[in-house]
Length: 360
Ligand code: IPM
Ligand code: MN
Image (tube, rainbow, N blue to C red; front, side, top):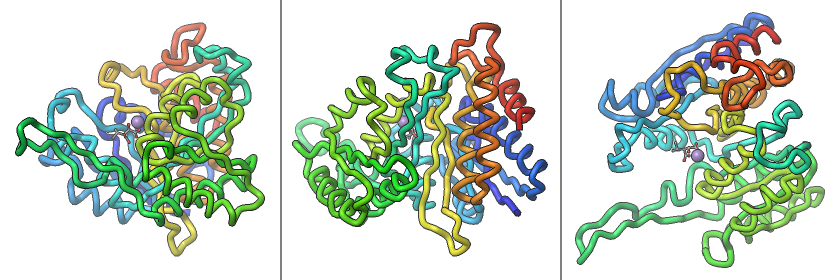
């Protein structure tokens, strides 16, 4: 198979973890005799430095041409006081929108070898296997009006949370489809005791749920969900929620996996004529400027994102499973990065990546 992949290393540890993820992709291509066509482009802070903006037109064009896109991380502290529309993060929001990837799948599972890496009690997290489906193209991240308005007696900051029924429908449908191949349980998360967008969300989720009688649906308020995620995470199978709720709860979910460095994600859009999904693959973690350039970031979130790419964009289930199994065997061997608090000397980013390649 011909794998035409665009790589966007981005900022901070993004460059280091994508290097290892690409190493794994190359290993898979060599072993299974796929042709890998890799291109690289700019996104985020590095794009601002080189081109003046976080999401250059070239990057947009290459992303729309590629079969799949692998992204590292965006964000640099030097832009902290810049307005949102100029910041590196806006590049990521731009590419998510341009590619139309509306469902962000963030699987969270506990690994036996990492039970002690989490501050939560082992018995609470042993066996956790859930997936957060985060709406990615709408809600308060994109709604207008937005801005800081200086035309009144004092500055006024405005953001707008807005959802149409069809935006809710397509992402909740994705959650039910996923649940069908899992433990057949969807939890829809909202704040319907306060927000109208959430009341519509709950209504649409309930309607979609009627078309999936084999899948159990329950609704949970987002504040309660935040608590249940640490009290009783094993009760969850598929969770579906709006954009910002998903951003927040997926970082909380990272505690269950032992480290945010472990979490991969797949951002999925429409199905292409070939049957493959449009996909942007990105670890859940950020650019972590505090440890950037030190070869100590955990590459597993990025490598797991490659496994997701192989599965969703290329339909290569065997290869995807091989990558996941290889990561698990490296975890068991204890050759892991410092965030996972291994007993011996921590592995570097590169050593962890090479170990996964060897295991494949
Ligand atoms: C994430 C990140 C991004 C988001 C930032 C970098 C814009 O936190 O992917 O979770 O908020 O979506
Ligand atoms: Mn986030």
